[in-house]
Image (tube, rainbow, N blue to C red):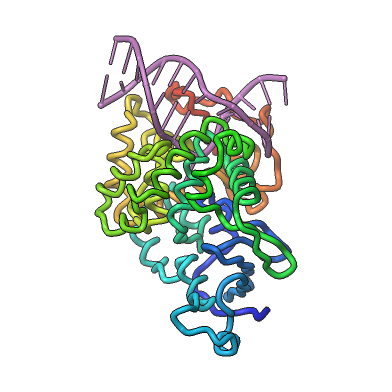
Length: 340
DNA sequence: CTCCAGGGATGAT
DNA sequence: ATCATCCATGGA
């Protein structure tokens, strides 16, 4: 029950966990409870330090590990190591942010998202969760993730709380489609199960795909049921550390069209994709995540100014939307408008 | 109540 | 290659 505490340079735990890249961390007191792989974790941030409590894996401290009598090869990595790796505390954030293009939209997002890191998620967990994400809001993806964990995962205790691991591909594969639908998966139940079957067989080995170049990795991912270019890019970015991968969802499409091509009709999806791959550079995935989080949190709440750490507290007000706003183009495209 | 969401698969132009 | 439609669901 020992806390491990260590200093961290540039990190915002809450922004990192609430930016729509991972969906299972729950706020408890001043910190968050969740899992890293099959280990239960509680983390909290205080100023420039991070405190972590891990259970269910190896003993937390060197003394406790020695006392356990386990051989060193049986030990999971120490707490600080696993936590640092998961939260990607080794990413050179200054350098990454300095590589972003210098334009007003990007600068606002970079300022708003200071300390947000792209974490290293377990591959299957990330893949499965994003298969469940299609046409779902972030809040609901969290519900689905929680339901899958509670029903099919293994229970772990951390502190006074309880969390569940994400179920293995074998476990999902042997669940019935109906059991999965009971986790609010809807039409995604079928593709999640089909992909779970493939991943749990020896036909595809997600770990070995780490050695592939981006193009081949993306192609392999897209061959899985329920995985298209968007979800493949999410998995590449959040689980394979391909920091160039640039997922384009409805929010990012709005940002690109309205902020970068405000008066150009006829930008096809293909053109947006080519633009984003070249313009945002070698860490485009980071740029994308900053644009996404900024648009969704700071700009996505009508009636709330762009400054705002208080934006989250206000519910949306449909009447407050700027329905009639047309920034000198008809826009439409079923894309609503980014306020501000 | 209605609206819409970190899309994908399929079939028609 | 681009576009239309359908697929389910519940938070806001």
